[in-house]
Length: 297
Image (cartoon, rainbow, N blue to C red; front, side, top):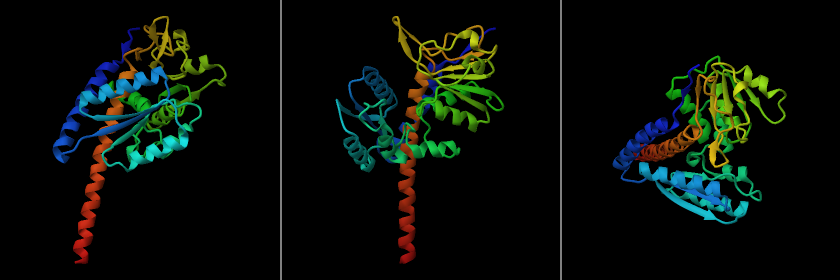
């Protein structure tokens, strides 16, 4: 079977071009800039690399960034920083780079982010709205996966999808997003019995377990679609959570160059959407205020 590579770099380029145009339109319409605040705690090298990549991507499309970096911190201290950024009208989006050190209550911090500035979609309220198929910022990686499937016009309706991994930031949200597209979902995890058979019976497999090449090529059904959201560094090269499925999968994402670039581009998309909605909200309040004054007079 001839396998088609789902080119994340191409998709990311298209998203970035669209975002860049929206940023320029925003600046023209509002005479203002769009700014993302990033928070990083600790000395985790991969986290610092990811923040650097996101900052560089913001620069490419004209989004300003402010970085708040702390070698160590407390939950209470971090919450105060987040509240300060919530109240700062010049900040349009807030991104907390995860994972945070174990001493910090990660979800409590995510839930402090104002809903309209939660551009990484990690607030419990955002997750709840998304699960009901309401407008909310989806976490960048799962939403990026949906962007990949949409770009290649892959119909999800009626398909059986197996999500391998149940993390709050990837496994659970992508399962709900696929369910909202009328796919039939199975979520697998460390306690799942006979993972191989679950994968073998699935039309779409989302690899999101964080173990290098754990899912074997021969586990896939002939013609299945593999979305590999893993990123591992082994023996000097980058590999995903699944073996390369060339010849078995009908479509698959490479590692690197698949889900990763689209995740960052999707974050940019969320940031500019947040900025636009914030301006629309301000204009609506001003219009209502003027109408109220007019009626009182």
